[in-house]
Image (cartoon, rainbow, N blue to C red; front, side, top):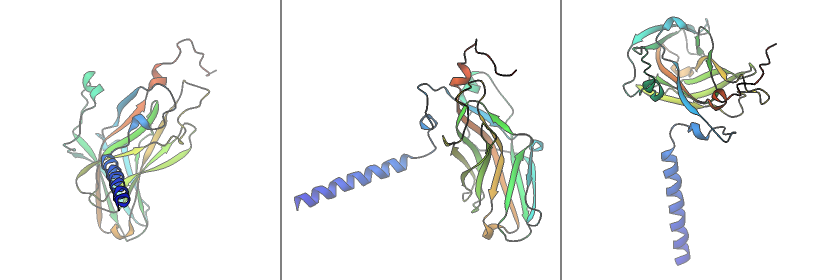
Length: 236
């Protein structure tokens, strides 16, 4: 009987520890993603504050609906300034968000693409990408479209949009996504090609609104800032 009681106590402790770990799981930890060097120089950088809707366009298949973008005044109250920008005295305008409006013609397996005027490069070795989103409690799924160091396309799921109000969504960049060539240290990084909303058919009715703000990345700039000054550039 004592042995059974002891086993039960150990099991409860183990399960409790597991739940504690799960409850502590929040955003991906950039310091533990794809660590392949003894030193890192992680920096949070701003990729887009979505201040200019003219730099973005939204499209969807013509048979299923139409989409458009607009600059909307507002933003999430919980958004915090980037510490390095504050220390450097950088004070960029951050008054607007990107609004996307889609009108569905019918229920269907459709999607909405949100693309910048040109790809957005990320210097260094990117660990995570985050942005604030108003999802409007739909079952749609938000994905980010990337190209790796070699120009190959990749697609990562950021999360479902089944929540109300502003929420910060973060996606970890897997180590399997090529961000550099081991033979060269003078060029590395990935590019953001845009976003894709995979629409749930039961929610493709009427008009859909989504808002985006403050896209950032955690990136390792150690190699960028520690290149040999006497290295030869292979550009001839």
